[in-house]
Image (tube, rainbow, N blue to C red; front, side, top):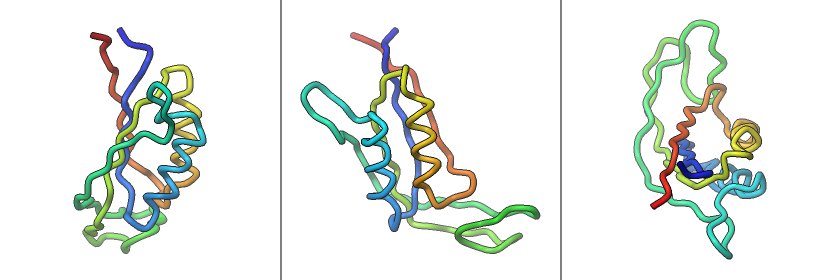
Length: 106
């Protein structure tokens, strides 16, 4: 099993650069002699804020669609918590969806 994971997060286009930089500053995205390594593609995020939510975008009870960037990067397992905290600080959403996948060494 590898000592790295893949972190994936969707973020509105308006905040993508801010989140990418936060990820890199926290230490993720290092591959060999390179830093800030990530991959992005655009898509549509969908959600409906429920009662008690404090949405950055949208209104309570209304389905919302937002053009987002899906940002993917590698991260050492030992700094995952710091990277996730950095994403949460830079991300505009109250509840950002963050996926973490184990990577295999070949």
